[in-house]
Image (cartoon, rainbow, N blue to C red; front, side, top):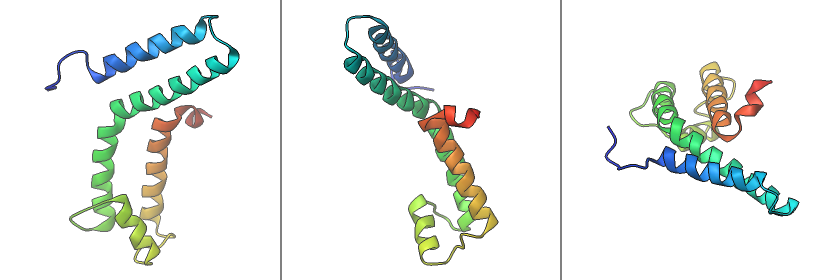
Length: 117
């Protein structure tokens, strides 16, 4: 269920992305301005992927973090502190697996092209 009316966040992002893409493809701009539009497109695509995948990733890693820490609460900051305080070893395979999986999920948001090679 979504309590927000239409257009949805995804629809708004798609509309803006479509507009910016049309502007990029037009010949109305210098190469410098087209490059700036490409940066805007990249940022909007990151936001779109985060809107589409963020909640699912957050929930998944919250639960994985709880399992890793074996505590009632989880945050990435808490993991960082435990590593810094040597309560978690950077050689611990469950920690390495958690960090690897988290990195892959973040790359899926930031630049999924990196994962295709």
